[in-house]
Length: 236
Image (cartoon, rainbow, N blue to C red; front, side, top):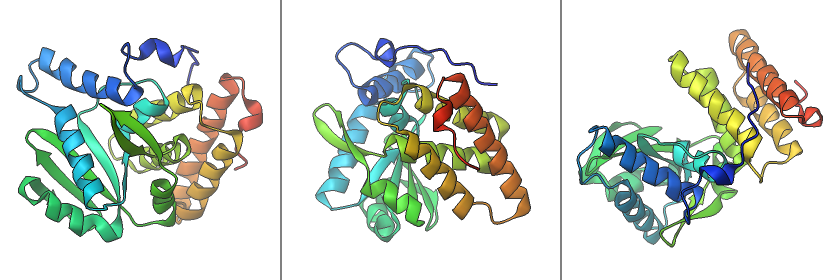
């Protein structure tokens, strides 16, 4: 059961920093303090380097995952940097990062960029490609970075929650989805129906999956009810 806290997002940002910059700082300094990463761990520098590399070589991409979440909702630390990349550009992106490549396939690639984990996810479905097309520009240290919209991040989080084998990871995805609903200023009522429609169209190809995703969408509507937005609830 989700309980709305109604905190102000601005209260969770580091002074003078955007949500994206706050998340990168948290993702660097917290693991350093715990001794989980080396003292020279530099997520900021590596992120900016890869973003510039992609932009210079016309790789079509957008940030997703925990860093994207921090542009739309409460910022939090994350262990990696996640990119959604046009499927036609995946091999080219791999070539640019070949020295850092660890493992993967046509749909997913994992890189270790001087200690910073970076995941590339191929945008193969129409809804994923739309996420790149509709990406918004965030900024980190003056560099513009495409970030998926609140609508498309909500969609990705719910898809992931339904597909996860790890219950704890699925719950994190749901918590992130709830945070987007509560804190995003860019989300609109029609976006919730868009999310529900895309999930029911593309991911409910068995009875088991239909029941699983309908339950998730029912939970989504429950969150909206608790947030005082019953008019936003999706028709499922």
